[in-house]
Length: 353
Ligand code: NAD
Image (cartoon, rainbow, N blue to C red; front, top):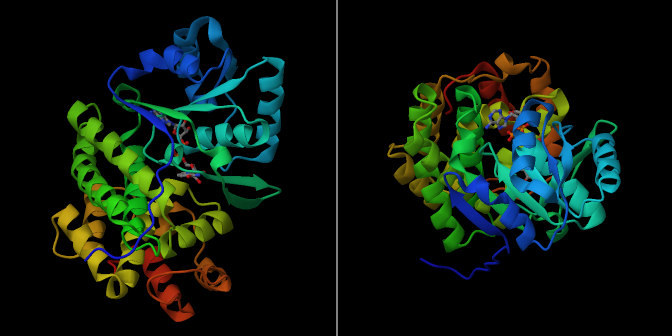
């Protein structure tokens, strides 16, 4: 049954395909910009130079200093580089870390952003920015940080290592899963969510063995776009809050944390979200949503236990305390005992119950 809902479309231009990065110069011009500063992580600096070459005369340089968690110190260095280069637009090439830096610059200067995503994190489709200052992460939601344009080029994802492809892909699936039971869910986003889960869950097991499989790469990037739209459009719940808490408290890697926690968060919410569970099971082609997600993660051969990615054993109680400290909306009420049990299972890598 369709209930009363609100749907707000976000004004982002999207180009999707293979070889689409060749259009980067035209897309910069379309933004009305004269000089574009290319942003990358140190690891992708070479690729940034190549994109700068494609932009040609309108390239104001490459700032290869993007790093995890968008630290304010790095943003300040990039601001200096933006001013020194007299740039009036940014081209962020990379994953969520690089996109985050572009958003932080847009927030402070109003420069338009063209994002060229090379992972499946989905930040390019959201008006959300998380920044860290003196070890504390704060998140804002504002149209001021929403990118103006996105170029998805399947060819740029071919170098994404198999393990990161898997965890980044499950990170994307998590956006769609929570969109299906969001308090402000709507039928259009739910369509995108179900299809996002379907395409990613079929593509990822192929990519683990054949990282250069073009059809699977195309489906994965398309699915990541759909899932990014979900994250940008509706509110997230228990799963994202837990990953935020665990990542922030124990400095755990972002995509891996999402991958490990997701089946457990879904098992917790299952009794309170039957329609969402039905959509997830349809998308996975599995009889049960949480078990199906656990089996997917197992098939991908990536870590399944928080203990494997650096969480300390005595962190289970700390994390449970923090997770219930600030009450937030979730389809099933969040209790300390329930959350402690969930985290303990995720810590040990056990099957969700
Ligand atoms: P990332 O951006 O940190 O990238 C991880 C590493 O992979 C980097 O070294 C990067 O250079 C490298 N890499 C990326 N693409 C590659 C490719 N195609 N080939 C080879 N190497 C490649 O990782 P991520 O998971 O994309 O992003 C995580 C960050 O994004 C987190 O800080 C998270 O909080 C943030 N995020 C924000 C939002 C939002 O809406 N604000 C959404 C999702 C994620």
